[in-house]
Structure formats: structure tokens, C-alpha cells
Length: 305
Image 1 (tube, rainbow, N blue to C red):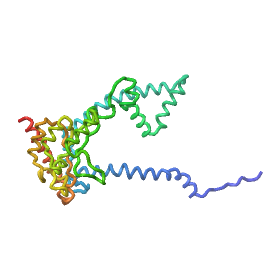
Image 2: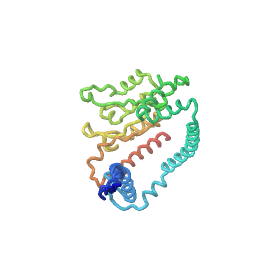
Image 3: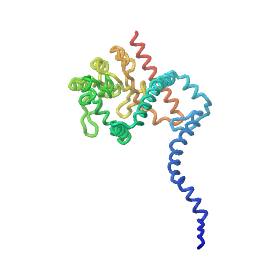
Image 4: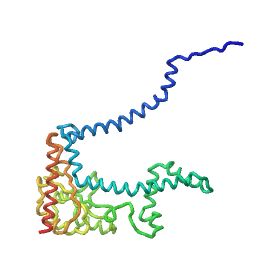
């Protein structure tokens, strides 16, 4: 009988064979560390400091940031809403999931149909599913409205889907402006004949065009749902903080109060901060917030006086 030859594999080769599967996981772990764990750790560290808009550490804050968040009424309300959502949806999801699992466990004549429907949801991309739902809930040609006999814009705000803003100047990139004067805005709204189309009045644009904004607001009072708030000191100094330009804010607020305005004040002051030194950006932003709060407070006082 011949002797069986013993082949000894190199030790390095055996080690590589054992380690090889883990090497394929390195890219995934690297991405996980870079985009998940590193941001989490960094944000946790930064939460104990005061930082500027560039996320540069200014000073140690201790637990002050956490105390501020945990005593904020909006945050607490959001937590409460989340708990209500979890309590109401999780049990229902578990029951439905268990029922579907039991249905799939036992083979039936309709099992193949059920399994195909179950797998289809995982095979179709999220974007395609989103498009299907958009078509299904489309108010004019969607199947939901046709089956129920309703006429509801399911995926849009029940009151506002589009807000037309008054422009300024003659043209942009060679395209003539139309909705500059309030009469043009009103005519456009009436021509569209859609209850979901409203107006976004830009007070700065109105000031640049020397429009009588009191008359404009009264003309459009039934259509304005949001307002762009900023000041101007000429066409080369636009989108600046209120009270730093040509607009008479007390007169303008009085006009808003007279029409009973309850819409949104949307700050458009992006040209206010670029020239501010980095050290003054946070105080400047806080001052901007106070100006906005003063405008809202003044409007409410005028409405009740």
C-alpha cells in the first residue's frame, strides 16, 4: 500500500482564507463609521457647547442646550404627538403583520397571488411607488376620487396649492414680468379661477415699484395667505432687515391690521448677514428674530385696538 502524501498548506494562506470574508465588509463598515457613527459622536460632543453657524465651538455650555430643548413647549408637544402616533400605530402594525405572517404560513389556493403581491412591494422602487400614489390621489384623474365620488386635493393643502408673488422690475433674463402691479396679480388670480391659487405679497417688491401698498393690500385682502417681509434701500440694497430701508412699517402694519391679516410673515433678509463678521452673526440673527417678533406683536396690537 502506498503512503498518502500529506500536503501542508502555508500558514499564511490558511489565515487569509479565514480572514477573507471580513475583508469584504471593510468598505461597508468604513461607510457606516463615516456617515453614521462619526456624525452621531460629533453632534453629541457639540451638544455640550455653543457653536456658530459654521459649527465652530465658541464656549462650553454644559447641559444648557438640553435644558433649553426639554423646556421648550414646541419640542414637548412634538414628543407628545410622536408618543400618540407610536401608541396608535405600533399595535395595529403588529396585529396586521402577525395576521399576514399566519396567512403566508399555510399554503392555500390563493397563496401564489398573495406572495406575488407581498414581493411586488419590495421589488418596485420607492420612487415608482410614490408616482403611483401621486396618480392615485390626483384630484382630477386619480382612482381614489373616482371610487369615492369625492373632489379632494389629497396631497395638497386644502386651502392653498399655489401662491403668486408680485414681482418688480421689467424683466429677468429677458423674460418680461407680468404680476408687478396689484391689478395684474388680481387679474391673474381671477383668470386662473382656482380656489387653491392665492397670493404671496412681497412688501419689498411693492416698495421698489412705489406701489401704494395700503391700496394693494385692500385690493388683494381675500387672496393673500403669506407675505415676504424685508426692506429695501434701492435696487442695489434689497432683502435687508425691516426698519433699515425705505418702508414705513407702522403704516404697512396698520394696513395689514385693517384687512384682518392672519397669514404668514416670511422673512427674506438673506442680504442682511453676508457683511457681518462671523463673531456677530449669532447676535445679528437673534436681533433679526426680535425684529420679527416686534412686527408680529405690533400687528396683533393694531388688530385689537
